[in-house]
Image (cartoon, rainbow, N blue to C red; front, side):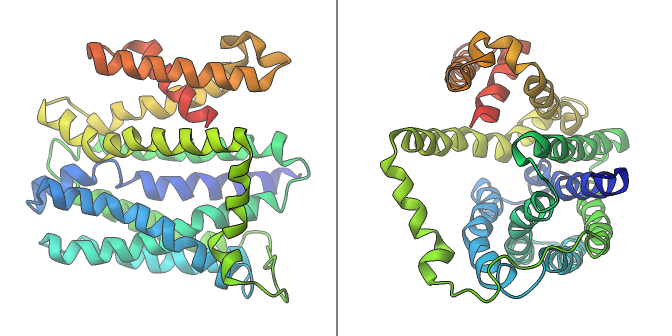
Length: 312
């Protein structure tokens, strides 16, 4: 792969997660402070992510996989999303905020699959090459959090600017998408059933014991993850921790570091990858329990929890 293409794909992945990280972490604090939203309304707002993820396969399966190139539909979704994020900044009540956020997440969540499709199509060895591009998504999320801390928007009660930053970056990303390598629809000309769109065939994988354990583990680890993103920033600001959003990027930083150091932490990793994965999940889970039981996270707990998430 030439350098020019590598830079373009890395920038694509960077902006994809920068747009999301620009407002998602601090949204709960914004809702409570600026719109006076209740805890239930805060949960509803974060629930739009899940609703968007449920609806996303219909957009990808019905439209992107059959009629349009991935990079073009991704560009359109981000351009429309930029308008929605900007319009959100004009809202003064949760009743006006919620339908716009739900509409935005329905448009944004499909782009997570589309950005992977664009990158995958350019790779010859996805298992070895993709992590070098995916890591730029994590860096983009970190950059967004650090910028929020640098501008001190939490302390100045200017978190509405996070949505403006997301809107501008979404606009830039939408334009850049049209200059990405052409990624034609993979299912063009093929008959696609409703079952294919909603992934009925994937349910057959649950017969595999290993996949079933993976499925259940993924489901369970997403429960505390949802609470973390919904409540952590609000909690940290309530206890007057300065630059909470910036400090929360330590989770993504440890995730990136742990991905590199993982073979050194788990000795079976060199020859028995599955054993290393199991050890990573177990250590991460135990560290999460220590965090809950003693309220003392420590560096090892942060790294351990990142390990459990990365392994899954």
